[in-house]
Amino acid sequence: MKNLMSLARRCWSMAGKVAVMAAVGAVAVTVAPSPASASTPGQFLTHWQLENYQTQLCLDGDGGRIWTTGDCPSFNTYFAVYTTPWDGFYNLQDPQTGLCLDGGGRVLETPCNWNNEYQAWHPGGQGPAATFGNKATGRCLDSNFNNEAYTNPCDWNNVYQNWFIRQA
Image (cartoon, rainbow, N blue to C red; front, top):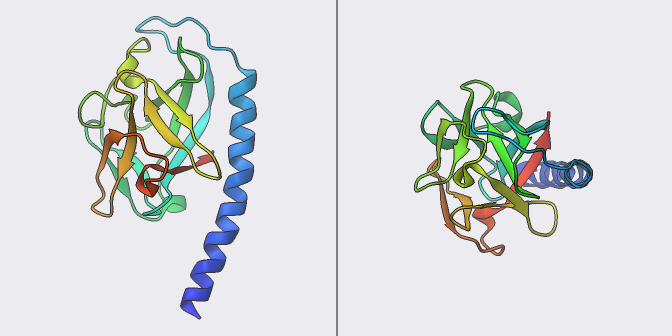
């Protein structure tokens, strides 16, 4: 019975996430990036919570390090999403710390520099989940069951690189 409940929860959750992805895609397509300086963010779009497809853990940060955490809906793990000077790429800012997701080397939170390609992320892929490619490195956001977040060469077939997007 427990397995049946878990399967039902996943199916129900996926259906809702597909609708969210469609809504996020519509927003991303209709908003044109505005020019930004290092101290001026692009246009604010929304808040996203990123839940890993395989681990069902959410991306979170503490003002330096980035990791994945437990039960997504009960944690305040949303990132503010801003346009960048590059079409289809977004800055993800942690509202708790004011820092941005940075993919230069390890995945960290660093002071936002709105023209920094290491802080520009592109959601892509097919289906209910998205990969997040980094503009500067071309690598994708990845995770594991050890609560670690890092980047690896992009591979849509790697379920640890697939992320559900929830809007706040």
